[in-house]
Amino acid sequence: MKVPFLDVRSAYLELKSELDRAVARALDSGWYIFGEEVARFEKSFADYTGARFAIGVGNGLDALRIALMAMGVSEGDEVIVPSNTYIATWLAVTQCGARPVPVEPDADTLNIDPQRIEQAMTSKTKVILPVHLYGQPAQMGPILDLARRKGVRVLEDGAQAHGARYRGMSIGGHGDAVTWSFYPGKNLGAFGDAGGVTTNDAELAERIRTIANYGSKVKYVNEVCGVNSRLDPIHAAALAVKLQFLDDWNARRVEIADYYRQHLQDTNVRVPAQHPDCASSWHLFPVFLQRRDALQASLKEAGIEALIHYPIPPHLQQAYQFLGFKKGAFPIAEALAETELSLPIGPHMTLEQAAYVCETIADFQ
Ligand SMILES: *Cc1c(COP(=O)(O)O)cnc(C)c1O
Image (tube, rainbow, N blue to C red; front, side):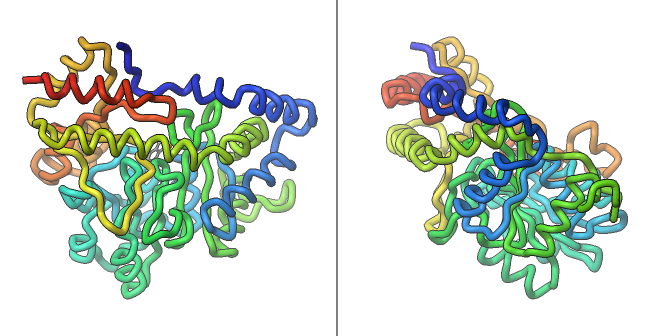
């Protein structure tokens, strides 16, 4: 049996006629930047996440960078980031000229440990940037309490958490703003690069919109040094169709995740812990074991594609040598990078495939 890591083509085929129609409508409109398709998707995505405003941008990294710019982050500022995340979270901070200040995760929830944030804060801290890693929400309650007490902003990286819930409420309505990626492999994915920001703050929404459009509200009148990062109507049209199926598709991910959690209990891999406040979107299903590379190879031999998220933590990347962190600086992130393996999961995976993955893992010595 073959088990691909994620089957994005099946997602297209399931909704082919609706998607084809939506994309054709966008093409036929003769309007290829902004316009109705974008406005319609922004409105439905805002409603879906429970935020007042959604602003489409070019991709998830731009969403982070533009949101930080709109929060006034610049040279000399510090931003609290998880020590274990995809590098985009850090890149957005350094692109603003600010310094990422890493905080270790809780080894069980795999998300930034709220207990460790305060001691990492200084008078230069401007924003706390938690990531809802693998789709499981970070501990927003304690993080928001701390941020309010300290007078700093909270920006959430929701790139992996479309449809995830914290204390019963969708990711999107909690902090100051949430950034989203609609990269094809995400839970809500476009047919190319796309991203967005949601917020309840009208002023922030306006600044984000302005920065993303060359720093301009009125054509050829530029208020700030902005960037060009916009959501294309073609992608917006497709995303609006897919958004209607997101909850169904996430429910199918939950089924696979529940199956894994139940059937991997007595094997030598550790499955992720679930916090009672959190309902994960199960963007990824990470397991942990010492002999990770050997398991990955043995799954591959059995036709199962498992991937590592992420093999090198940002502080040990060559790109971030200039920050001066040495190996051992963030031992929890480093241990996770050495032992993590993401099993296949997605709305178009079958329980038979999940069973085969579990059997193969049980047979692994
Ligand atoms: C995918 C991802 C991003 C970046 O999104 P792009 O659309 O690829 O730029 C940022 N943060 C996290 C946690 C991601 O998984």
